Amino acid sequence: MNFKAALYKRLEKYARIDTQSDENSQTFPSTKKQLVLLKLLAAELKAIGAKRVKLDKYGYVTAEIPATVKGKKPVVGFLAHVDTSPAASGLGVKPQVHKAWKGGDIVISRKHGLVLNTKNCPELAGCRGEDIVTASGDTLLGADDKAGLAIIMTVAEYLLKHKEIPHGALRIGFTPDEEVGQGVKFFDVKAFGADVAYTVDGDVAGAVEEENFNADGVKIAVEGKSVHPGTAKNAMANAARIAADIVAGWPEHLLPETTENREGFIMFTDISGGTEKAEVSGIAREHDLKKLKAMERQLEAIVAAKRLKYPLARIDLTFKEQYRNMKEVIVKRPEIMGKLMAAVKQAGLTPHVKPVRGGTDGARLSFMGLPTPNVFTGGYNYHGRYEWVSLDGMNKSAEVLINLAREWTK
Ligand SMILES: [Zn+2]
Image (tube, rainbow, N blue to C red; front, side, top):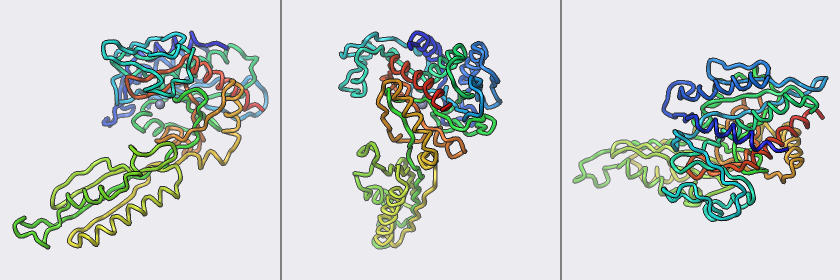
């Protein structure tokens, strides 16, 4: 199956629409411009003959591809997000195709001196001979997640035309604001009506994700004692310095900049204060909940030692649950990953299960009652000007979704 031309046509069209989300916005969706693409997608779904196409008051687009087989089969959902990251401009995106990449430098922009190769992106090495799409040097590409949108739309169109392919009812969902962590906040899981879903969002061909971080917020509040520095001996507790002492006491090998894959960390994101008062905020991240709690106890021990060292100060340490690892939900129904692995293998790829070093919409949905692992799109280097996606990888992703729809009738 070769969908590359159709996939590129859609990717290009969607990428040219600026849909950057905004983490400081109080509205939902966080930016109005996301609705431009959401409306377009709803219109396209109607045009290809999808059923029950709906754009709700939050901007969620949902639709159905009716079953082609009789009998009760699990309803499978496919989801992708329309917004692009606030980390890089998404205005005036000009996609370009580097056809049949031979393995040398891919010039994104001569003007900006932006070059992509296997040295600065080893993940590219698996894509020799493939058509690679990048932006043109001034913006991100937005394949995260417009590649996902293009893949789902192309698969939907194909399945609606080829009713001989056996599948149960399929649901499609397009959502805003994934990049600012709010993507499925108002998503009506019950109305969506799927028994299981897959996000089609990111990573190189073959990658599938069933696991994300367990995440807690960290807060350290220090109350000091201010005294004239001239008479401060044994009388002052300098809150700002105590806060810095605690932060410096955290081991170097448990930081985001020194960890990868399955290694957890605590990152101190913010320090503010003075002599009287200081506050440190941070995030704790670990795939294994037991290890997360152990790391938190380690920070508690550091703080306890500082309380002894600074008896004139008051130091409070608190943790707040942010999100949990979706694997906990997904492992309860082994067929969810089992069918995905089979679908990836049928597309001629070796599945590669990767732990997500972050949160995902799928994680939130999983805890809302809809188990939702992630399927690759064939892209990489998200949220910046080096972003790329392989059209061949996108094509494989489309094949995987078709295989997956068939797998769920078995
Ligand atoms: Zn994404």
